[in-house]
Length: 302
Length: 221
Image (cartoon, rainbow over all chains, first blue to last red):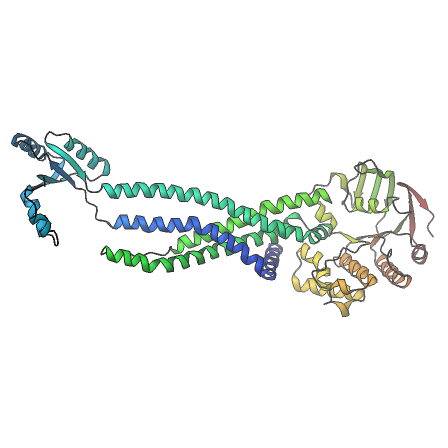
């Protein structure tokens, strides 16, 4: 056990020394990894902020029901009767005159409404169904829209639903990108480690002759790959921090124009740890594949 | 300690380096392998250290059958064998003491103990004043002594040396052979491939003569 720990410490020190002895190569590899990782993780952050924006909107389980302009009074009564049924929590009638008056009261719109020769607005109901689930809302809206005299229904949460659906696609895209860039990461790490193994051929062969196990030989390279992955993750963090700092002011300005206090949120500690953990893991994996292959080749060319 | 039974080694391409070799070497023996270059001396040493595997026959070291030794067991066999190479196989990216400490690092020694032992063996081969030097700055004789120090630092029971004095002038060669005699006297088993007759005469011991892959024993001098 103590011998094992000693070997780990020895390999870690060796790996650190190798990284330090080639600062430029280390930095370039870390940057290549960092840029690769910053793409999926940056997209992840953007999506997270967007869905937070969508989530902040008041959930309005309301259906606006607009009537035909030539609706008959019988049809109006049939609709009113339907809206008294038990699946409707409340229904508020908005006559077209009241709607026009409300519109005129809105700042800046009085001039426009004053110029109208006749009221273009339809009579409407604002309906709040008993159930608030998305499916139930859609069902009630569809049913109401089929009633005679109803021109159209409008589900007020519709655009939020569409945004959620778009975000769901975006999230799937993020995972696809994560998969692709994980492969890229393994390839970058494997390539860097392969170069290391080749420059250390002599050491590997001599070590084997004096009793080194493959595990002993592999260990510093694995640490090297893992450390390189960790540095790549940190580099990605740097790239995203710079991007976030550059975007913060314009985003806040845009949000301000919409009267919102929205601002970009940085990743959580857990998310940062997860990214660093994954990059370390994939750096290690790339190193493992590369060293295993190189050792096999050295074995056969001996 | 070492026994060969009907051992044949044929390399890819058909060259037969050893043909039906039988031999036995006891613990604590000092054995010289002689013969012209290409007679199979290096191959014989490589078979003992499991660097090569026999084409047929049985090589056994310390009671272990080398032909059947698993890939994973080979490193542990080699930790009991000190290897001295004609081309030294030193690592030029580290200094003298780091070269000598390498086998102890591999075996998992504590760093401070390892350095202490390495320093003792470097002192024994007379290189203590160069312990921080890069091996590339050493003379041929010093490099060979460094190689011997690395072979001995883990106190192996068996030392294999392939032409240890091959590139050295007579003075250095005598130094190194004197060192080998000391190890022999403390009980180390030595197998030395050489065609340095003076060395053989100076040390005495058993002589195995190889000729085109066949072995013949010469009376011990």
